[in-house]
Image (cartoon, rainbow, N blue to C red):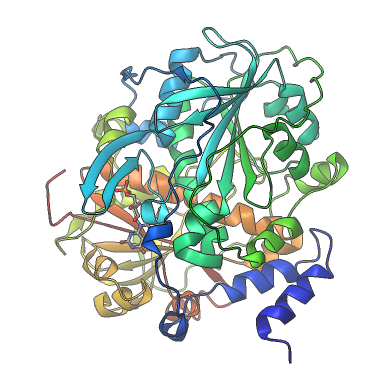
Length: 525
Ligand SMILES: Cc1cc2nc3c(=O)[nH]c(=O)nc-3n(C[C@H](O)[C@H](O)[C@H](O)COP(=O)(O)O)c2cc1C
């Protein structure tokens, strides 16, 4: 008799297009965490086979970058809350490129442990496994010749994969998405399955969006600090982008593009992207395949520029119903009163809190975090600008001026609606996969989304976008917390229990992401 897993695989293999969303539902259901699934999963960490956290091209010469930080003077809370208007003429030079890369994906801290050394990066990442790689596709920039480059955080350098201007290939792959067509530089993020699946198995596909998102939150903010317009593009012909980077989609896949800067001239027609056959170092002795993820990716792939064109924009709206319960207006800090710590300072001091003190934060802290983090993400799947796929639900434990309880955030009204009052520290610890961090935080912020509506509009690819948006907003919450000298950490969760906890209000919505905010028990930031 076929196992459930085999049935799922069969179901997926008979589907071919993005609009048949059984694939996304199968993946989502199969990768939910529950009290029972955690206890029955026999998976263990094979430390001897842990993948290295870097992609290494041994045959390519490094082009070293400087990680000398240029102080832009732009406050972190401004950088995450604002973006540069789309057609502002500006292009980065090599030093700016280096800072964009360093503050998004660079190694900012190292810590030794008995088995080796962990290289922590500028953005938070599940398990510190760093499965997201960055590639540059650019025309001639000041200090950097046109080409396709791989960014190596390990030795902070670029390696050139192709010489020449290949931006035209991305213009075609995105059906002439306007920001891509006019960008002097496009950063392509790819995700490598095994590097994260070593620990998280098939749930890793969700992490692609989360971990790419936290990185993009930094990238967008740093772009703003340099006066560069930026736009995240999730609609592209997958095979064309993978071919340009010469990645094998069984192991590594293009996940998002970010257009940076604007020039009026369009790029020339791209040379054809032949196979490169470059050697890369295997990440570990052997890899375990989780076909469910590759199937999810294939089912959410776009196959032609015509499909891309109809895919982007027109974001589905799933509005909250007007508040029925008691409400708490938020009181975010005005620009003149907000902490002035710069985006560079804040990113460099960020690190996920490992223990919260249970002490309270104040209403201005929380209001400023929610207000600054949710002012809109420039993205091809968020149209009109300012639209958001995720709704934020909160468990407030210790915020001065707000009674402990469960709340939903009405972004358009700037207030929290109380769903139920009470001390829910124990429940929050349980919902956050029975960890102490969500129980000790001042507030836990859950992201919930109406996947049905999103899939109806965006097909299976809507799953990528909702996770990616959550990661970007989560990354902004990290920055907004650290800008105010608070701590934060991303967390994972028991999917259906989260929906149950926030129901009836959250009925029909799925848990997508969780970030906890509070005061660190260990060190004042
Ligand atoms: C989406 C997301 C989920 C995470 N989930 C957990 C978690 O469940 N438990 C935990 O202790 N840390 C969690 N973390 C924190 C990571 O372990 C941390 O980001 C990583 O070790 C890198 O360290 P850093 O954030 O201090 O740079 C999560 C981080 C992210 C971005």
